[in-house]
Each structure stands twice: as C-alpha cells, then as structure tokens.
Image (cartoon, rainbow over all chains, first blue to last red; front, side, top):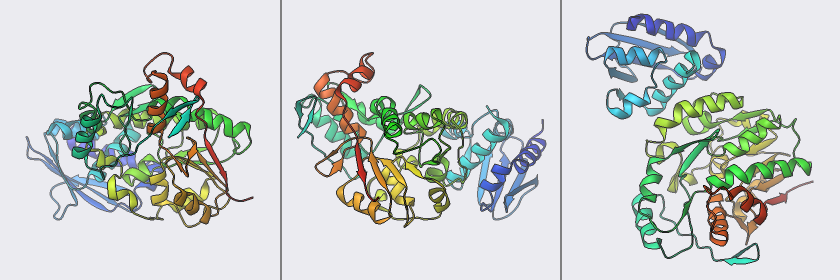
Length: 113
Length: 280
C-alpha cells in the first residue's frame, strides 16, 4: 500500500475509535511526514479529536517525522513501533517525545499487535 | 535499625538527588561492604505478566556492583503486594465493587493483577500520568498489550523520561486529571505520582501506596481520605520503599528474588503492612 493510502486509513480508523477521539480531543497538532528516500511529503492534522491527512507540505508543523517511505508505511500501518527505528536512528523526529508516543499508542490501538 | 523475623537489620538511606553518576559511585563504594543494596528512585525491571523488561539506566548502575545483591523491590511487588490486597479485602477495608485508580500499573503489575483478578473496576493511568495521554487503561488484557508493546523500547530511554526523579518529585500539584481521582474509591500506586496529581479532596477514599513520611500522612489526612495503606510497614514514622524492605529480606534470609524459595521466604518472614485509619 502506498504511504498516502496508509495515512488515510490510519486517520479513518483513529476517527472511528471513540476512546482515541476522546484521548485526542485536546491534542491540536500539525504533523509533517517526509519520506527521505522518495521525497514525498504528507501531513496529518489533529483538531478537536479528529484527524485528517493529505499530501503536500504545510508550514509550521508542530511535529516533523522523517524516515524512508517503507519505514513510515510500516509505522502507520502498525507493523513497526516508531520507538524502534527512533532508537536506531532510522526515524528522525522534531517535536515532543510525548507526541511520538501518542502516535505509537494510536497505531497499537487501531491495528493491534 | 529494623527487626525482621527477630533479626536486627541496619538500614541506611543515601540519596544522590537524581544523579545517576553519583549513584554509580556510591554503589561501587558499597559493593562487598553491605549485605544487600536497595535501589530506590529507579526500577531495575518492569515486569508485565511474567515478562521482565530491564531499564537501561538501572542496568548501567547495577553493572558497577559485582558482589552485593542489588534489589529494586520488584520481587516484593510481585509476591507481597498482591497479598496486601487480599488482606485488605478479607478485613473489608476494600470491596470488589470499589472503583480503583492505579496511577501507574506497569511498575506494580502485582497489585494491578490482583485488582483485575478480584473483579475491581480498575483504571490504570500509566499513559495519563506518565505520558499525558488521556487514555485510561480499562482491562488487564489492555494493560498487558500496551506494556508488552511499549516497554521493550521505552526501557532503553533515559529513566528521567519515564518517571520524575530528584527535584522533579517535589512538583506539586497538578489537578488536570482530577476526574479520575474523583471517580475512584481506591487510589493506588507510586506515591510521588499520586501526590503530583491528587486533588485537594480525597474524601472517604483508600490510598494504597508506600514510601510515605509523617508529613505525607498528614497531607493525606488533610484531604479527608479514610485509609492510608502502605504495602510495607510503618517504621519510625515512615514506610520504606519496597526496595528497602526487599533488601532487608535478602539480608536476613540470604534468599534473592530469583531463587525458587523466594515466595515462601517472603511469606514466612511476613513483613507486614501499614494501615492508618484517618477518619471514621
């Protein structure tokens, strides 16, 4: 599945989970996602408990995530915990650790192990 | 000096104000000179459903010690603390209908497991109180799933990112998660976390924790709580951490938590627990 499709399914599944929308109700963020090998850029926006996603750049992102496209797809499809490539240096994050953990929890809750 | 099983144990508390480097030097200086070392302020392991995750910072500390057993309380948390819950139930201090808030359960899986096993409606607040993710964990299965997913990588990070240490422990009091305290009758877990987030009223609630001082008892009393239960006994006005009592048990018995006789040893020594009735 292409990274854009993965992100779209990620936000749809998150928005369909009432406990996750409750968790995110006060989480207002713009997240930039950059695939370092292909140069693709995507965004995820969180506002009032709902996520949305799209292609392209958004200025002033609160959280910026950079990795190879297959790593990003693996993370957002729940096949890999983001902390694993983060600790190995394969995932670069500009922003807060708590935001990264939140994305990890979301992927776990919507995809399971 | 405390007494365990009729044997005197000299206990000395030495702090390093959150400095891992100073802690390492201190541990090295004590190695081979004391019967057991209780590692406080940091866990050596987190244990979830029988699976043990070593905390990297603690491993670095312990590497400095080659002769003396180093204990972090994990063995007492697994074996002794669930027995305290059973005892409170049999004394009718708590009831399985009581809603429970465990401010953190991954560092006290034994108690959380006991609450879930006995049918208490239990919220584990690990994500809420340690990561500010407002996601209450509502079942044992969910706790195990989250723990086994998150801990393998999280334990590699600096311990200060996982838990307040040193002066951070004195930060008071953030009420943003008050509703979880209000909804519970039993508040259980690490006292530093409880104190950091508790509201000004805990009327008729039961607090189950340890590592409390006389001043902490008064702070709990001022919030109108009904019971303060400490999973280790009160000695000279304070309840020691599980690491201290575990080290004391090892010092008098010579049996360490990885020994097959550990559970029986703890049961035989019966360290007791503290129960302060604060108001009728």
